Image 1 (cartoon, one colour):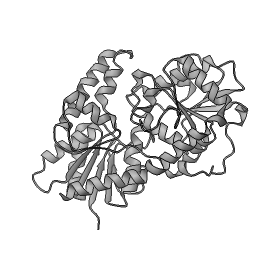
Image 2 (image 1 turned 30 degrees about the vertical axis):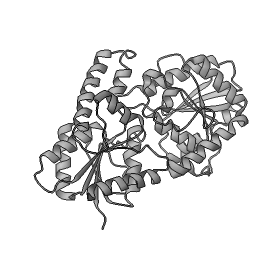
Image 3 (image 1 turned 90 degrees about the horizontal axis):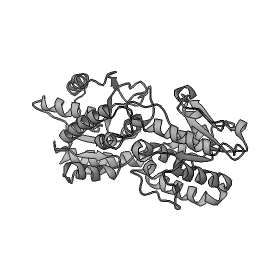
Image 4 (image 1 turned 90 degrees about the vertical axis):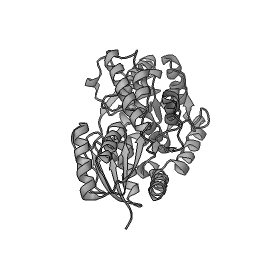
Length: 383
């Protein structure tokens, strides 16, 4: 019998994207190495292991649930992902006098930095500043606790060093992965969902409404500006935003952009991604798009030509301009001209698509990520 692993996160099955992705897929593949139990906000989608849904972001509720789970499940290891679950796990273990599980933290984002970067571009900077201070203190408590940290990107250890003056030998960078259904070339027998827009090349943007962070909102607004710039080329380019309804947008919408809303069936989502021609990551500097990593990896795995601003690739520096994708500046004009050139000369950039797909298959599957994390958890808990 393998070791018992308790995964604590803010996994929310009603929003199966963003912060949901890491605990869900890692949990799925970590069942190869451990007996798993999941704690999250809404774990109704977790069919591969027993779970408890808390339904609240209350620190007290998390602590109570963790203590109960430690008593009943008796985990050997606790893997706490993001700030709230990490704090709850740390406090819960302080309240236990013996048989304490081995704790490992996971930083999907460096929240204080994200709030700080958006401070002067949001409607209510005071609220953003308060959140910045709160998360700075909370993540600082976790960092100085001495507990090992698994970070979802190389930028996080660098930010920890810059913001806290602390360099630790126990911070491991293991990013996100991609799912097998995206790596598989089959199209699930779906017909092209974009026939009504052809012969235009389809530029897809994934931008669901997410809790608290406005990065996707910013990407939608930037996409609308780019679409306006190219509105006179309806036969060349059509933009499609997945995860967002048009009634969520308060600005005028150009004729060359469509909103598909949330696609609840995974097969439909994959088909809409695979039949697109270009994938766009239009994030401004202020967006601080930590969640864009998931989108970028999905795009690369689906063999799409990716066009991104520098911020859209934060944490994925291994993917390079003119080697795996096209990286633009932040101006509407530059993004639009790059999109138009790509749509007009799509075959010219096929080598970039192939190079990115090769890198994805070699290093970025969730299976490979889970194997690396399992090694860290097993070695740490055995020492």
